[in-house]
Length: 71
Figure 1 (spheres, rainbow, N blue to C red):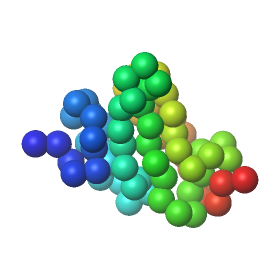
Figure 2: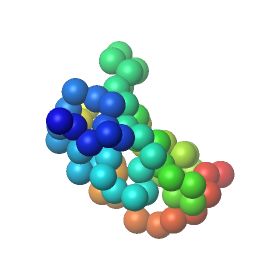
Figure 3: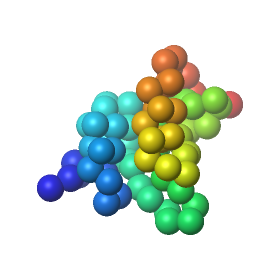
């Protein structure tokens, strides 16, 4: 069973979904994978991390180092 915040079919994203900085992880098919961030965190000025592949989503999420509200 996947983490409750991981709404994708990719169990490797459970580690991201379990992080307290994450609200939800979902897959929009042709529009890629999205990771909604908790209030007070941003990814390059956005409230979500977006990637086309699971490996890219994991890499981009690991790069999230500083808290802050989206621009």
